[in-house]
Amino acid sequence: MKKETVERLLLVLSLISIGVALRWMLSSYPNVAPTAALAMFAGYKLSSVRWALMVPIWITTLSDVLIGGYAWPVMMTVYVALALPVFLGVAIRRFQPKTDTWLGKLTSGLLLGGASVCGSVLFFMISNFAVWASTAAGFGLPMYAASWSGLVECYAAALPFFRYTLTGDACFNVAIFGTYALGCLLVASPQKENAAVISAD
Image (cartoon, rainbow, N blue to C red):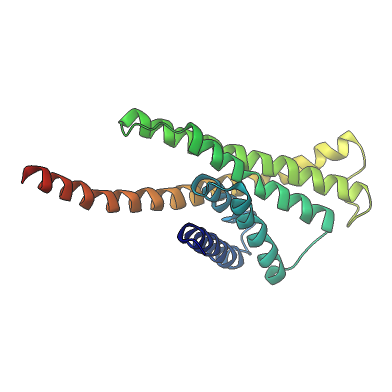
């Protein structure tokens, strides 16, 4: 097995393990989970989308086994919604500035913030549409009518939980990408010092 493949596999397994552990520990907090942030980081860090998609899919699958499932149409839709941040991570990698100036760092931060909010909004829209559609179709409790008013009622009822999604995604994205940036900085600093010593000699 190639070294690159081993490193990629180790990263994927690490992200899945962290995601399952955190999702299980935070299961009592509504809509606060690391899955979307880890999916975004996987899309950012891994060159292969296929490998990156394994992160949210396996986090959700394994943690659902531990926590428990719900109506299968909603579950499948949630899996799709949590996989979409992978593509947001790919977009961040492609469009982030290559310069290490303050403007480049600001732009990167704005890209990350915008992607985080976009992922939260997508999850809110897709998952709650699935809740409405599944209940209207008879999969689960008949909470909402199969009409536009029922759909609006579903979204209105979910609004209090949306703030938890926004906050959770933002905090996890800052923690994950911030830790990665700090690690890169700590690794790069000794290399710059060594290069300066060599050039001075």
